[in-house]
Structure formats: structure tokens, C-alpha cells
Image (cartoon, rainbow, N blue to C red; front, side):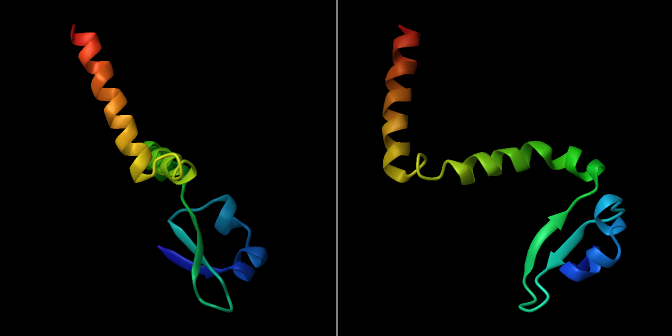
Length: 84
């Protein structure tokens, strides 16, 4: 794993265009990791997990506790109807 700051990949774009390892890009002033660059081979391995997490992140309001409880009630009654 490599940690670079945003000005490093401006100087050397191959960090981003041809990554050979996982690269963490950090804010140069605050020293906080802001982004991650994965080689495509690694992405293929974790693709489904990333998509699942993005779905949850983008739909977190719809997946609130009350919405979850309501969904479970609907799902339970739907399953009972299918069994009958």
C-alpha cells in the first residue's frame, strides 16, 4: 500500500493511471485519507461488496429502523401468502 498526497499524483500521473498496488490519497494539509485507488484486478475481487455498500450508503434514509421494521412486516405477510 502506498500513501500519497494530492500533489504527488499531479507530478506523477502513473500513480493513478497504472496503479500496481492499493494507493491511499490523503489531504496534504490535514493528513486525512480522502480517496483510495485500486488496481482493476483488486476491484474485480471486491466489486460486489463495494456495490452493496454503495447501495446501502445511497439508500440509508429508506433503510432506517422504522422502514426496516415496516419492510419486515410486509415481507412476512408476503411470504405467508406465497406459502398458502
